Image (tube, rainbow, N blue to C red; front, side):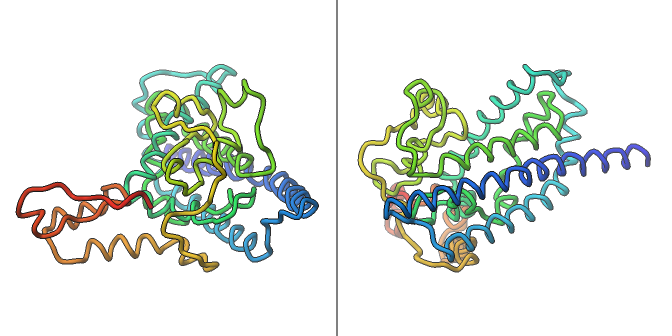
Length: 306
């Protein structure tokens, strides 16, 4: 009983640590958004609107609530893995840096999977639905991330030997950094910085719907993972933002659930069960083959990334 109570207290502390960090960052985010809106107004290139910011704040708030509930439900798995950890990692400056680097490494694969598995894309598409690029775009998140399994990618960190509360904080720090790469107001950082870190230039590419930019630059903090795994593309042509099949809506509920609706509608269509279920894990652009293709044993044909 005492052990359960201690774990409960540790869980609240872990989740609270993340929320405190984000609450402390909230005024910083607000100041930078206000500065960017003023800067764009002066240049007569305004991309902010009251409706857009309001929608994005609603999406960020609902995501934060869902995220907190999800951590309460799954934190036990992190502590269970931590009990059978591979290493006893002390809390020092070098272990914090190591944790941030490893979390970023796993983030790369989470982010890549979020584009290449439709189940995960159903959540992530909300973030990409914005047709403008400014700091407020970073707030556009989905309430369904816990359902699509974002938290699964952080489990290995606890198994390696990092305390669950520090893992949660590392995720929050990563998201805090990523807020600042959602902008057109910063064109290029110094060359050495562009070579190592994710920057506004790299992330504009990620949000673009230009054919040459789709499914590129998955980096969270370090761009080196994209260069290592062959998904890096530099910003060259001007970026057109959004998704291939734009939804053109201000309704936050449509933004959060339209791809889930479409995915389950595809699963419900008549056909072989294995092909119906494949809509859940196949890439978002995957289409079922025709009945003739199935009979002849041909492969499905895609239609391009969403």
